Length: 229
Image (cartoon, rainbow, N blue to C red; front, side, top):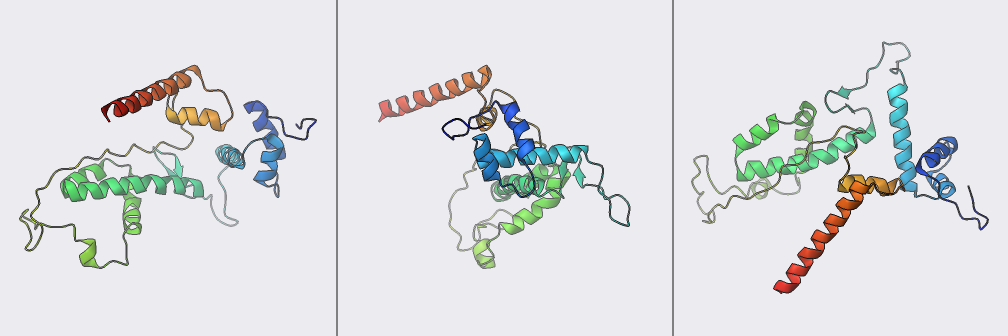
């Protein structure tokens, strides 16, 4: 829909998505569809992902030309399909946080704490965690440089020449569990508020109240910090 001035007119979310399904054809760019609907190209990419997910749930298992059905590598409990590039990207992004926390436990609380945390992870995360840990190693540094943070032996005694500084246990929050694809954050929450805005729909009352409460809290903190200064 285009106004008399030539500028695209914004549509309601349901109508906009229905129009997107009509316009999304091979060879049509996201930018062209975005201009037609008066939205961002990023939203069109989200629509395309939503369309692919819907098609995957309704499409029978793909078959090799001469072989048996090729089953998707679905991950129980997370509904991840590792043949889907988007799912692999989500898993890798989540595992970066898991790997960082795992390294923190190794350094600050010891291997027993790290092993206990690893045992709580879903199997797919346990299987792929070594790859993320390896990817985070700076291979341009020597082994001595990579292990320079170790200043004690197996018995907890300081190594010769190591700095004699007291160990102060650090704190770090455990990463949140990975949500299965398609599972939305409930209202009210910051993620739900962001979703409302990306879909160009008005926030619900709960999300609006949540945003106002966060803004009031931030204002009070800034006001307190200025008074203290």
